[in-house]
Image 1 (cartoon, rainbow, N blue to C red):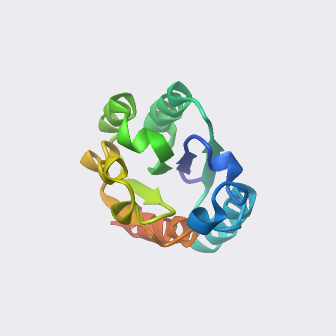
Image 2: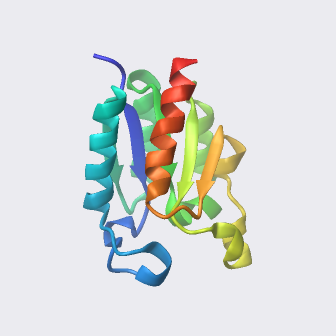
Image 3: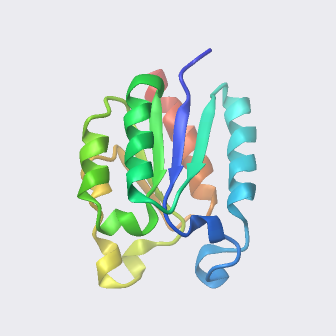
Length: 146
């Protein structure tokens, strides 16, 4: 079995579909996980899909991926703009990292336009709604095949 792609989600994404649907849409995180699982199967990939509201848990999953994962797709949510700890953990990961944001963070408040994670990411997908996760999976397939 091939190494999994870790798909990691930060705080408040458990409220997807309920919280600010005008920005984040009406799909739930469970919908996103199901779509990712279906596409991963089509692409011949295995995924580990996680969400947490706790920064340290995200760091733990990134560290776990060091030994077990082929790549990381991460939507760190609000931790994008604040977490040097997540950045440091990502720097210790040797595989590809893709950063995903449901909304176009560059059209939002100034504080949302800075990303610590982007300093490590091999690519950033923003403003494509939840389809951004599927785009990231397709790109990840290319990156790990190279």
